[in-house]
Length: 86
Image (cartoon, rainbow, N blue to C red; front, top):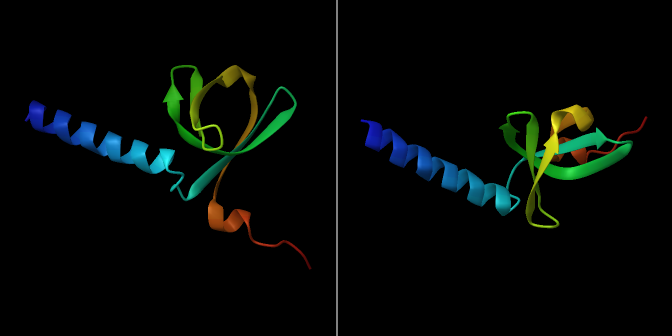
């Protein structure tokens, strides 16, 4: 049972990593830190006291300390592009 769970969890992790690195995620993250706003990154998860983010433009993973983050927003991509107006 332990081997089965290990293999399945590894496979699911690999599939999720593949979809994230191909920017196929339906979620996008906007965060504010040190007075700067960074949009379009994908939240991978949290590792201890750091957020793990995928930057599809640079095709790189970024670790950002939780203490540096002032604001974190997660939204669906389809709602991000909807026009706002009267």
